Image 1 (cartoon, one colour):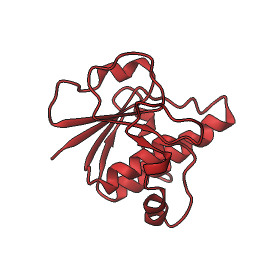
Image 2 (cartoon, one colour):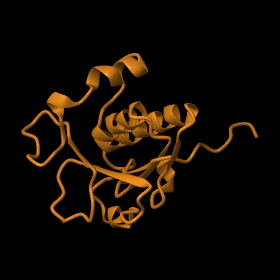
Image 3 (cartoon, one colour):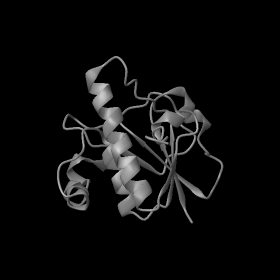
Image 4 (cartoon, one colour):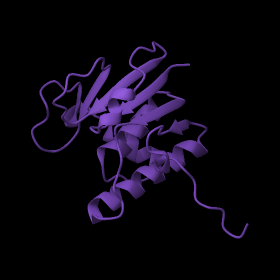
Length: 146
């Protein structure tokens, strides 16, 4: 089973399993550091895309993502990329180099919640998703009434 590591821009991205051949490595947007190995680079923003990106706005399957969820339930790149990974058949996904500070900024709080909604959707589909250096991204809630 092929595994996937998705890298954000924070320093824990360097802890991704670069040397492990059972993983594909994806990243998105702009990084100014040289990364050891990347299989796929995304830049799906509406502004001028990064010229080295493999997947850009014009060749990203937005329609398929919206159809899978039954509407427009995305507000950030990570959410779209997670659904893209599902559409590509990945069953094990790890997140590195991303932490949404959900306590200070309204935009980031919304992004954090949207990514968690997508994670919960994928977990319900049987996908294993972990975030080794930011476990609150993939953690469930404290049980209610128990």
